[in-house]
Length: 131
Image 1 (tube, rainbow, N blue to C red):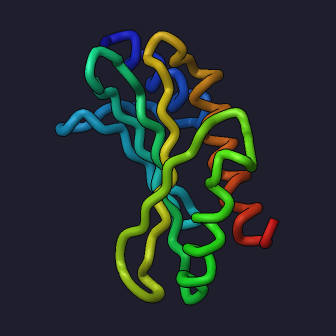
Image 2: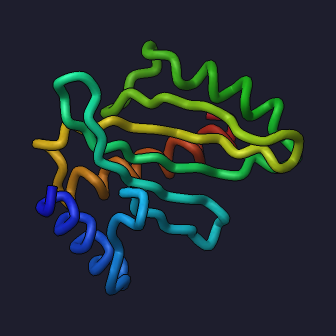
Image 3: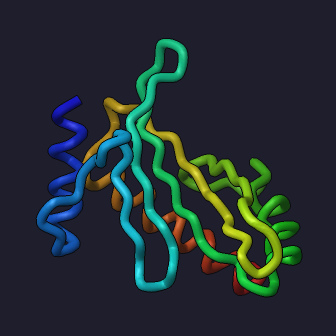
């Protein structure tokens, strides 16, 4: 798994971070200025090795409306380059929307990680804008 750590380190360097990588529990985390949290974790599911890319965004006072729209938007009929799984955590204005993309570990590169993060960010922006 050291190549996954090397990929995370290179991703961090491209963002100006000198030591981005998994922490004590095997998860690389980054808090963004927007309040969003990016987390990347290598996991094994059955016989498949995957890298989970999770983006958590605060929903604020419009949490209930955004939660409902997120459930509609995540439906497979809306398409997109990656299937997204969602969940929420917290209540009221403290609610966070968790958006998750699963990448096959063999496809995990700096480019695929960048694309996944960009896609999750755009997906959330579109959700907020009502698209």
